Length: 232
Image (cartoon, rainbow, N blue to C red):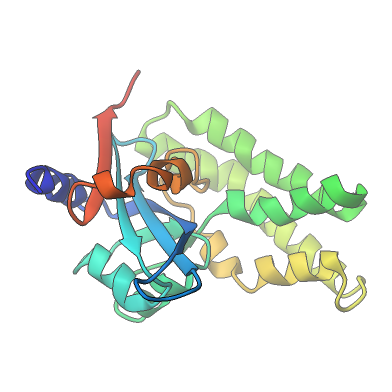
């Protein structure tokens, strides 16, 4: 518990940002006295990639209930980059703005292409790849130039992708894997089209599986944290 003040300070530092990246790693939890395990989550928050301080803070959530995520976020009213985790939904009604993660959006199409070489999935991956390329070009730009290049290059790609997805959804069989992938992304299109400090998350938040696997008893108090200055 001696490290708790440091961890609390790091959490507060992360939450000074309007935009944070969020990720949730499922872990198995066994309640004392219970015979079976149930799904719990390690919640992770970090700064966006252009922050000077590279910091990640974790919290253990015994379920996906909104009360746990709200407790972790406190009174923060910013914009998490996330992928439809149920625990954040209550916050969206209290002033928190959801930003969809394009890396998660890409994953279903990638899995489909790996499984059966789906040509439609390949087309979706090609379009999303164009967004990744814009992000690579914008990486070292100022905030103003990054906003400009996204408006000039990313926005047209997003509009074209949405038009294509809507057209393909009318053609593919109901219940098919590609229909499910399209539906999953289309229902979250508003969140996915918010052009924030980074439209791709996941890279900055390490998987918590190994972090929690053998070291759960070593967590400093309620939150676990790691930090380091961003390297140039």
